[in-house]
Image (cartoon, rainbow, N blue to C red):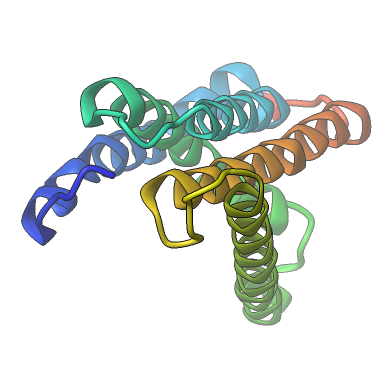
Length: 181
């Protein structure tokens, strides 16, 4: 556990926030050049790798080695994903239906986030309890058990990200809108 202050934690998250903002702004250029599917799967791959890297954390970890790389890679991935998902979601919607489509997308994101957070909490608590049960002198609230729980959660999330990555490769058609001269 790093024992960072609120300010240090906030500054630490800039490693994810800044690349997300930058890549979200550049994603339309990437989509025009490489197509929606390639940008989507690239973003998914980066997020998946970020989650997997987070799953390798340990109780004695450091920000620079254990968190920074995953935050940076994940930030790039999310920056590619957010706009791409929205573009894909609206690409085949009639203009008079964009309001309802936006509502459905937002509701889906909120519901998915709530379900994902619930599953993550279940996995974290279960893995932490298993760790404490199998290591003498360790309780569920020790840094070692909590880290085991978080590591398990990131393994679970990385597995779901891998599933999404594979489904995108298999199910999303490859096409690019032709550029008008």
